[in-house]
Length: 158
Length: 414
Image: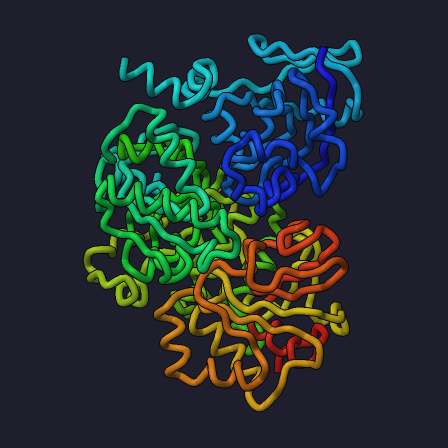
């Protein structure tokens, strides 16, 4: 089971990782500052396998790929939102962080709830109910399945 | 069935006879822009992907702007990595102190009408103002382009925005785009192309159009295009005949067409802490300010400095308020000195800083303290962007900003 961390609409990349931390030498040093302006405890409480559930337009704002990268580094299993901002969505897939779209889930669950994510089926089970998420186009699913764009390019070369 | 402007650019680029929204196509990239914040990550991913040589050194622009000049010892590392990558890959377009990437790309002719350009920054949408398909991407995708020269894109739906008539004297392109963002909301154009037109847009300078396209990403837009005209041709240094094809077909299909009457628009501000939280400036009159910032890739151009100087001619900045002015590029700085704008602003009490991103990215050049309020001409007022998250950031036009700097509180420009 995964623990759910909920976020509202229009969470921007400055909130996911403030710009002053982009100068740290690597993502591992940045990850402890995730969501710092919204939550004092997220970065210390989140455990590998946990889920982020959000409203519309998750990851809007800057192009910083460190935003999805710190979530992946913290072990977040997937982000399920009503919708995603464009660059965050592309970058998440390119680094192998699953991003799923569900119109209903964020209104149905609360912070701290437990859920089961089935990535193959594209479903989240929470509170005894199964929520079907929108599937990715095949091209993007291939990148995600491979573990990200680097893995795809390395495989093409080999 | 006709095509919108973005569809025609993608068709020309790919050689496809027709494209339609939702289709995934692979485009040939004409130019890329990488800035100082992300070059270490791009270089690292490029190596991890197994690439050794970039696809075309002439098509790559490396621009240092977020950290110029450095404000912390660790900043230097980004320049060292950037310089080493530029030397190794024999990059020919490297700018270390010349200004903000989104000003330099169109100003230097790196982003031209009809081209396809990607950058490691969300405000790469700016170059749509000269009829260029330009959009922001992450550093991993940028590394992939450096190796392959290609990127897959989804052909976007287009929202056409028509603005007709004459803008009132105290209303600028910044007020127009802020009004549009308030109406479309922060996700109103996600994955979509905006296409600006109408007589008010035709009358706008290229600089004003750059302001509009720059901020279009704040409603999620993938790109924001203006069909090139004689002004674009002169600005970009290309013959009009070469770019005459860059216009939407009369029977193009739009997801929506939104009309504005220019005469009905007013000076507005984006209030803390969302860019789509738009209110008429008249309703905010009297809001006390600690600092005013005029600059950025949104509003650091010559006409913006002229507007600011016009408001501050013969006046002084309110006691205790800090006014920071940052020209968007070296050439704009020189022109503003020649025109006397800089002298006017300095006499009024402004702190003029070197061209670069400055305060907009919250790293240097006027960071605010707990509980302070700033009125700024840049593009984002997100929580914690210019200091602690208790800082209140209002966004407005250069005229509103300069007039308010003299008053010490938000006022309407004369």
